[in-house]
Amino acid sequence: MPIEINNLSYIYAKGTPFEQKALNNICLKIEDGEFVGLIGHTGSGKSTLIQHINRLIKPSEGTIIVDGEDINGDKINLKKLRQKIGLVFQYPEHQLFEMTVYKDVAFGPQNMGLSKEEIDIRVRKALDIVGFSGEDIYEKSPFELSGGQKRRVAIAGVLAMEPKVLILDEPTAGLDPKGRDEIFAEIKKIHEQSKITIILVSHSMEDIARYVQRLIVMDKGTVAFEGEPKNVFTHIKELENIGLGVPQVTYLMQALKDKGFNIMDNPMNINEAYEEIIRLLK
Image (cartoon, rainbow, N blue to C red):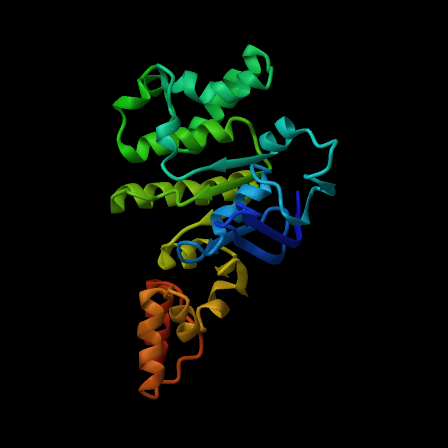
């Protein structure tokens, strides 16, 4: 389900003294099944952009075409659109409210009017995808779980509606390193197993570099850079100038280049850097 964003602009509080242009002539295409990273400093427009994609916000100018249909058209079915495009906000565990994990994950499919049998299949499948299998978890209160586990339940609640696109806004915010690693491992598994489009918003350069296929960098409501992470992270000074950075390993390899070492690639993680250093030593 491809997404085409054409000349998208958005102005907050238009016509008031607080008017502010949050997006300025954004043009992007996200292909079906892509794993895309979206980064930018606070106020860059990334959260405003993702809210446009499942039409929580209507644009001031421009169009968004999802699966060949203008989502801002008069005939768009918003309920069906939001079933196709699942949006997981920061701290989604704050949206948990049912008495049991099973009931919380089943809430979305129930609202879709599915049969009891289909709901059961979807709930079990979604919980299995995020690493919860077995009857013991189903009847637990979600409020008894750890922060990382709650977040996985919240993600399962979106997956149970079987979206074609999954948007995750800072899915590891506030988690400890173990919880963060668990969430990213589950997101990777979701992409590999379900083949759905994933748009990941994150401030962690290391995590973005490790998982996404394409990177979109936003600054002041515009797209500053776009491309494979290896190519985007070559713009170290430019990224620093807009309040971002690059993975620590990229800084290391750049320092080696500055010392005269013949670094042939642009390693994105420790394993790639290790292989490049071994090559140099040989």
